[in-house]
Length: 146
Image 1 (cartoon, rainbow, N blue to C red):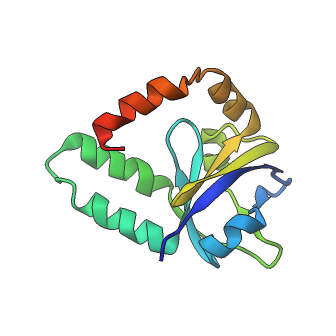
Image 2 (cartoon, helix red, strand yellow; image 1 turned 135 degrees about the horizontal axis):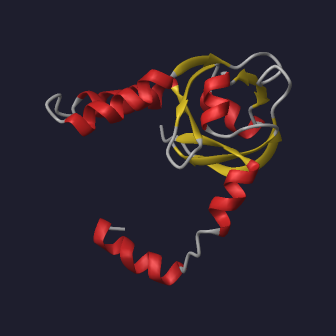
C-alpha cells in the first residue's frame, strides 16, 4: 500500500498547544503517529509505519560517522509519540513550538510520507524566498533520475 500525503491547509494552535490535524491527513496518519523536528524550521508528523521505515534507514547509518550520529540525535531527542484525540487534535510540546516558531497560525502540508507543520509566518517567508523556476528545477532533477 502506498501512502500519499498531499495538500496544504491553514490551521491554528489553541491555548493548550493543540492543533487539529486536517481530516484528509488523519486517515493516513492513523490513531498514533510520531511528531519531531523537521528541517527548515518546520515539524514532521510521521505515521507509525513510515516512522518505522525511516528508523530502519537511520539505523543503517554508520555509528562511526559523527554527522550521522548528530542527525539521529537531532530527530530522536525531539521525537514524541502522539495520539490523535477524538476531536482530531494532537498536542505539540512547548519545545517543538519554540523550535518551529509556532505561535498561533499554522500551515500543514502533506509531503509524500509525512506531514509538515509550519508557522504560517515562517512558511510564507520560506515560500517568498524560494524563487523556483520549474524548468530549471526539472532539469536539475534529471541528475537524481527523475
